[in-house]
Image (cartoon, rainbow, N blue to C red; front, side, top):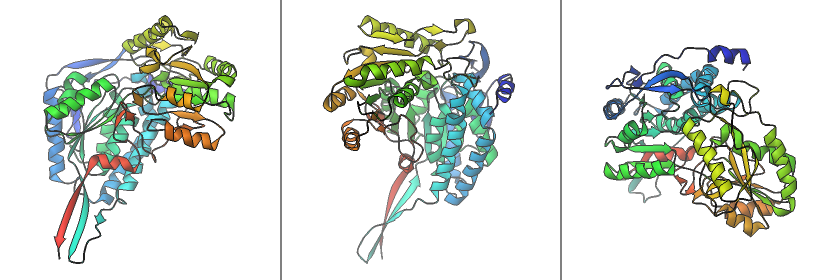
Length: 494
């Protein structure tokens, strides 16, 4: 990846985008459109179709027809594997094009977007392609005059709604296992970042995925998203996003056909540094990255830092130094460590969170202001807030921006109580040289992921999902297949 290649792709004109239904680009029935505004410079990049109820209905109809026709749903797993492996290869072949397209759309720094979006998506598709012909049914331990079989079958039509921070990576976490299992899929991308998933669907068709098996309906959440959640011919809905929308989707399931709903919701993840941390400088650098990468727009971001009192001053000095060295800039420049905030409303929310924390008694150690205003884009200096207490809103609520809330703790019990003092339970981290402390904290922290002497890096082989109000269900790993398959018992008298 070279800067000259990125600059060439940056200059490419993006044509007006359509929906992708039945294997081809399709205009919205209403012909309504939404402008795509780049967070890099505030300028209109292109437009997308503003799909609504009628378009969702058409997409679901194509998905159901494809499923019932059976060329994909009843194909041998080895055949689905071949198509998905070709799909993964195509994504990799077009990886830089896709990454630059996504950065222009949502502002993630290119060095991160390239790995986290197309390359990660290709890896995910390849993982489930390789796995699906190795997943067996079961033979029950019955008496000799009975044969008990347990079959695993695809559910039918899967609705997928994904967020704007990593639409392709998170989309692949859901689309990959759903397709591998034999389902048809209808995706509602975020209106702030739809371009990469539209390209993703085109490549799937080029790889040989039958028409109608993967459909993309762009549009607003209140129209296209809700229509997908309410549709009575959607069998399962997979969602990553806010708790408020997650609750709404559960209501939609209850109001329609009681479709299964899998939710990966918000996080307010604790990053806990004990006095025996093996390397303070390294831990500080990783902790800064763990909250400030992608401008803090990461569901598992380590947005609460807990530091043991005896090393607090030393650690905070290293953290401030590591944060000050991060370069916030044009996300399509390889020299930028942090890119743009995805939208102006999100930028305002981040700035308000900092101001609100200060009003409640927190101290701003560094950052927290809008920068690069002259660019027309949405840029913010990473903020570290100290003297934060559990009663403060910035401690309890997800900001989803480059805002770190810091407090100190005395001992293990204190750290555990502080770590668990939010409604969320998505991710966490513990830094310690003690194996015993690490194991006790892994058990004590109420979170779906606990990193030890690291923050991030958990790959496709392990599940991701939350405890408490961070949702239920799991993305990634073989466990994700459970969300898109059903078990059928055959009880055969011999």
